[in-house]
Length: 278
Image (cartoon, rainbow, N blue to C red; front, side, top):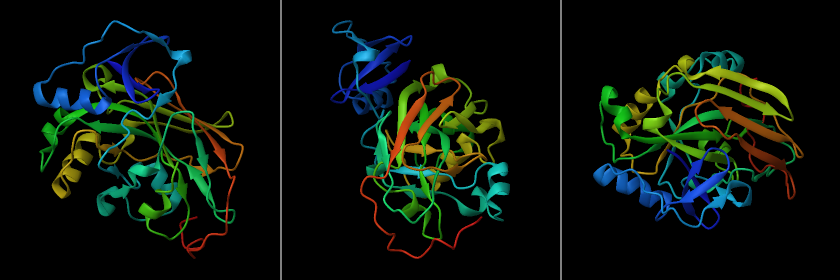
C-alpha cells in the first residue's frame, strides 16, 4: 500500500496520485497493528480527500530515533576524499526533532557555513528488532520512503551537523514493504533548482538495508516507527536560500520536495568550518 500522513496527522491510502482514502488511527497505530497481528490497514471508505487539497506530513512524526549510515556509497567516499566508510564508522543518530514535512522549508541557521543536500532511501521499522540476523532483517521493515539529509559541512560531530530543526525532510509517501519490493534495486535522483546532482542505485550501497538493520539492532533496540536512512551517493553540493530541492526514488511515486531559506541566520558559534573533507 502507498500510505500518507496528512492534515492533522491522519493517515490514508493513496490511490494513484489523486485520492486519499482515510484509515483508522495514526501512522503509528497502523504500524503497531501490523507489528502485533500482521493486519493490513483497512480503508474507511468515507470522507475521501483529494491529494491536491491535503497538506502532506512526514509519514512518521514521532520516531524514537533516526539511525543514519555515514559514507555508504563508494562514489561518495571518493568525492569526500575520506578513508573510512560505513564499515568502519557504524552509524550515527539524528534528532527526531529535525524532521520536516514534505514541501516544507529548510531554515539554514548560519550565514558563514556551508550546507549540502543529500538524497537517501529511508526505511521505517515495523517490529521491535534486537540483535536480528541479517537474513531476517527485512522481515522487520514496515515500509520505505524518501529522505533528505541536510548537512552542515565541518569538523563537528555528524549528529550535530545534521540535527538542526528542519534538516530532515521525509516523505511524502510510505510504501509498505510487500508492495515496494527489493530495496537493493532502487533508482535515486536528486535535483537542486532543476539541476540533476545525484543519480545512483541502491545496488551500489556498501552496506545493504538488511546489513544496516542487523548491525543497528545489535547496538540499540529498534522500535516500530524508527527510521533507518541508508546514506547518500556522490553529487552532494552546497545549497542556499531560495533553492528548491527535489528527490525521486523508484517505487515511491511522488517526489519529496523542499525549499531553502535563511531568514534568521547568525554567525556559527563552533569552529569546525575548516576541519572537514574537501
